[in-house]
Length: 253
Ligand SMILES: [Zn+2]
Ligand SMILES: [Zn+2]
Image 1: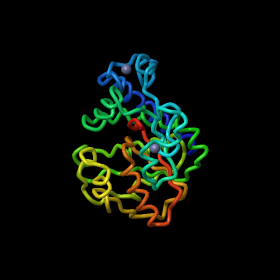
Image 2: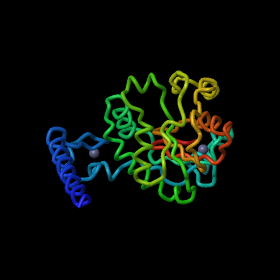
Image 3: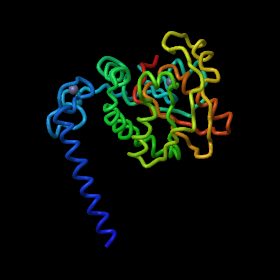
């Protein structure tokens, strides 16, 4: 009896939610996260024109960091040849350039967090093979610091990680890792300065929910300095099997 009553209420709730969603769509019709064109019914998360030319990273790619390579024989990008990274390996879905770069910047700086649904789906679909072979037990977002989160109103890697967790069923630990120190914007620094800048930037506050292998999730991978800083903190706490999946990466050399 009770059960019947509950499911009745639940379906009323679902109907109301769907009505609210439809009304929202009427006032704020969903737009293509790449070109911002209003999406027609049944067009999916991205418009057909943009879907045809999404800048996916394709083989050959660096076996360590996943950046695309020019020559198949190369195995590792120059950056990964020069220095040892702290993670086992990682992969990115898109090249961080042109329309995709603009999309990510709109998401971050103009509060287009609705793009994260598309990003998370791409990450999960394109990363499915890697997830099967890495078998991560915990998803860990690479957090932004409090000041940035306050300015932006959200932490994109936490939201992304949460959505990837929902799609894959792999538990996410949102609060285990904190970015404890305000760091300078990485893009203005060279490789050595980046490393110095990130020293002690991350603190593992609560390791109780972490199970290896760990999957780090973030929006962009550039030199790997941030990933390495997170990995160093995890290693200090005894975790060694660390992988990453990110939405975009720059070109490898
Ligand atoms: Zn489009
Ligand atoms: Zn590499």
